[in-house]
Amino acid sequence: MYAVIKTGGKQYRVAVGEKLKVEQIPADIGAVITLEEVLAVGKDDGIVVGAPLVPGASVAVTVLSHGRGDKVRIFKMRRRKHYQKHQGHRQNYTELRIDEIRS
View (cartoon, rainbow, N blue to C red):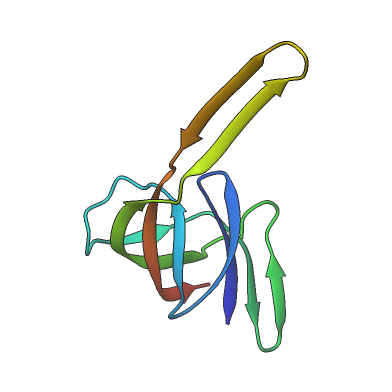
């Protein structure tokens, strides 16, 4: 069984037992939270697609940790104009473990 959920402006295909890094969620480590935005649920007998959400479906997850991702280097340059700009960015994330898919 799997589900397609939406969190942080992105969509993820998840199954029970998987670990997932998503955009930062304000929750304590060890907290069990419920994600209500379920776009689709797949079972052995087929798939249920919402319009836009599947009614009554939710995903229970446990917050494992918070952290910061790898540095992304940004380099801008204008040729022949002696312009160069260096910048970096590290995005915050929350690591989740999928505990249960309710449909």
